[in-house]
Image (cartoon, rainbow, N blue to C red; front, side, top):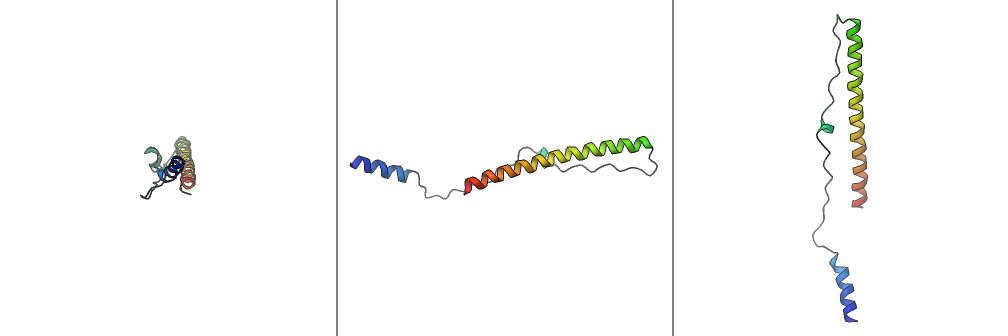
Amino acid sequence: MKLVVLAISLALTACSTLVPVTMTFPEAPGRQAQVACPNLQKLKDDALLSDVSRTITINYSTYYECAVKTDAWIEWYEIQRRIFEGVVK
């Protein structure tokens, strides 16, 4: 009987700690997600139609690359925040 009481008391006190446990939010993955998006190109006043179409194509691709990167960053952040808040509670 004494052994059972000792085992139960050991099991209950072994998991407690006197040191407060602090959790830190995880670091962001990679530096690529933290780089600012580049500025879009501007047309010159004497631009030809071919220059206009080239600039539009470059600007669209630059914008959508930045949008994908930003959406991925937001998704990662939201998932990590939910995990972090779920563990802290």
